[in-house]
Length: 496
Image (cartoon, rainbow, N blue to C red):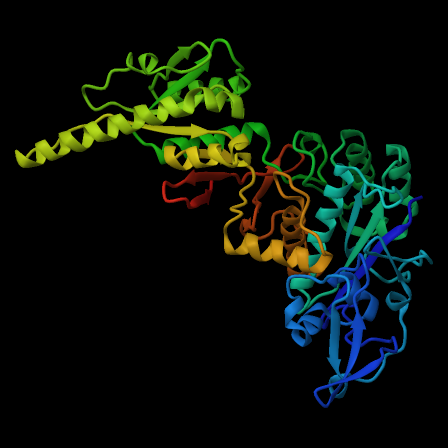
């Protein structure tokens, strides 16, 4: 079995990890007539690791040393006024843990005390993910899973002042067979009694966890596997990623509400990819049921202005263009021409409206808009700029406006805690862990330690939103985002 990475208890006064005062004997030096305890940062150390090593809360370190708010480097000197250092503490189980690869490792493997009078499930979240802690160089998948866990811990720390006890139990399952993980679900007391379990992204292991959890009565929060459908037959399974059928329905709802009165035009490259045919087929059926027949414009390799001039515009038709592919390559085949076409319609509309206004009349003008896919949220550089110039709208399970205050603040906290940025990915796994942790910890505390999948209203985080409803035997998230890239460079979104 892999070693325990961490057991954390969140108590009313805050995280057990934040014990406040160092049990280590720090040397003293005099600076400008005042005595300070000091610590010199070593190579490879992060602010987070130093905080745990010295048992001093992060905010206390930063408050005493404001210059390290964005992280530390080898040779930095941390100073703590002698007069403000509170009495030394006796070492606890948490203080006896050692730092391994920037994470706390409990070599004893001691489990929480058994309480025969306790309810069947503890107020706890068990995180079973492949971290690759034993690997000299963990691969990207392991790094992403570790980012998720780190983001979860930041969420726990941000909620430390709230009342309620919640344990976070973490196991590294890298290299373990699904049947071994299933066996651990029964033999590891801390996991067996957790109210909620978070499993990995691979089908076999996730399904093994779900099967054992259903027997034991623990809920499985599936936030990492998009395509899993076990929730339809397992009453303890929650699919945190909106299923495709739900996502398509909400996406077309968003399209209809964003562009009322517009006729959809499907762009299809006869010499390219059509990887979004499932969506365009669903869209066509929905619009047909509303009495609106979508149009199709086919082109060969690159869209030309001549391909669009077949569309009637003389009586003020309004079109919303939907490509049959979400790839960057296909986007580049039509985006520039579509932008020129859209600009031309808008220029003509302005002239018509001005002329009609001079005559005391109103005029119907042709318009064109663009609706696209989750894939587009990963665009950067020129492609991202073109999304703004097109004033494009997309649907997606995730929304991370990396320019927003919340996103920048969380990224800064992550770098400050761990000494390195999040691994680049869409979605950002560190933020995914933060949103998941915030949702689960608030839910458990609000329900006296029990998890309630149908609790209260929808949750909207930095990057994810959760709104669970019954779907088959289990639960599925129905929330997606409708995202608009505005011409002024801003990105706005609403939960659909």
